[in-house]
Image 1 (cartoon, rainbow, N blue to C red):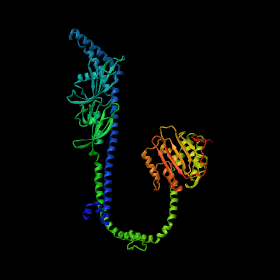
Image 2 (image 1 turned 180 degrees about the vertical axis):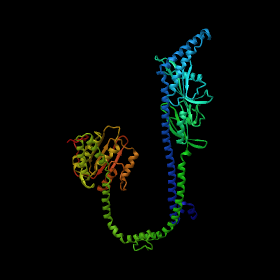
Image 3 (image 1 turned 120 degrees about the vertical axis):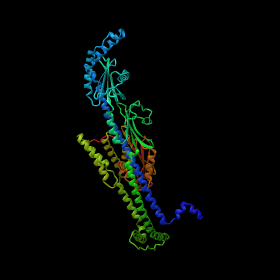
Image 4 (image 1 turned 30 degrees about the vertical axis):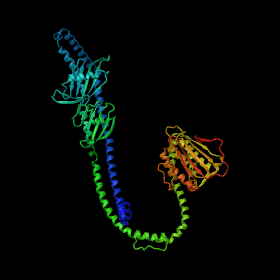
Length: 637
């Protein structure tokens, strides 16, 4: 038997001395919360940093792409300039005619039949290139502008003197791509080319056909922008995010990458590019055993996608410092707390054992025992109170009934103090705005109604009884005020047997329930909300039903609400509610009429909510009104 007790942890815990158990409890209470709080704080801080980084980086990407888009828009506008310069179009026509005649002559009679007209060619070149130099100086970064006639003869201007050596191949590609356009500008992604300065360069290009007045093509213009235009933006972005960037077009061609390792190549099969689905988003990936955060966004104008890679280690640097400081502080606090718990556990247990022994004697019926007070600490004070308790226990038994009565009164006062003034404030604000903007009699009507409601609400104690017709009038006034705030939005239907109109009920029985229906059940998709208040009498019960055609509530919320109504704990203030709340109404009914009465809630999503109030029976024969009263307009003056 002893062996079994040693093997059973629960048995061993129950046999453990009080000092050890108290020490164990202190250890659990101290270590677990501090460890959990430290872990939660670190994770929350780290997650907050990453979320803020994603939002900030998306904003930075958007700003960068806006600047790039503006630059490309300027390039497109520059490419349209030849369409408005007659000198360029005239010389392109001259160039086309000259080369057309030369081609026909060469094809018919040989190269000697049509000699070169150098003066004409020089005139054409000067006429076009002079205008190209002007175009090239309009925008910073457009460092090369090429204009071609229909036979591929090129005229160009470059700010730094570097032009393409593969100009013929570039022209063939450009002409083929823009052949299907009707003079619109076409953007070409970054290309690598060899310049006449014997250096490799990168540029993205805007190409457009040049049309004459009859919209016939007479040439082609290509505006090269050096990749440094984008590089400046990306360097600034990488500096802020402490990461690297990749810009690709719709086909996966690399416009720019921070290391220039895959510039002007196709990265459509890159795993990172494949994961960057959609126009924007973020995801995590592991590269070289290091976790990386990828953030991407797409320009709606150029459809260029920017992908930023940020090492997670860089994001969590500050969080790691915070974690280490928190860990050291936690260990220090745990050590101090454990030392204090050891001392306190032994100091507490000895007098507590004595107290437990005396309590057992009292439990057996011996009221003559006394606790010997040796110190004036908390245990000594507890001993004094224990001795006084024994001498006054009989008086306390006699006073229990009076205390219960006072408790009910206190609960009623507490419930009354929970009335939320938000509705009054909102109504007064509506009155003020109506008086200022409309300058009509609506404000006077609203003030009159509000005065009636205030006099009714604060004219007596909340547990005073009033005739049910007065409670109905209070609800009517409330709905009228609502319809001033939301014109013709609410319609109240009252169906009350005449005898019940004189039935005495507690104040503010209906209005809080109607207010709850308005503020929590209003369906924005419906132009009008109907609220019905109906009553019926039976031999053993007076039942009042308040229902609406609002949005209702799901089963889980409904079940939680009904459980809350049936709970015997004191109601607490419902933050954000439109009145004193359903729970407070239910508690006032129970306190006034007894626990056999109260209310229940029935609801389903989209079908509205019904609150059923059960009150004691009303003496007399039940009778129903011949017709119902509809309240949805404003009161007359």
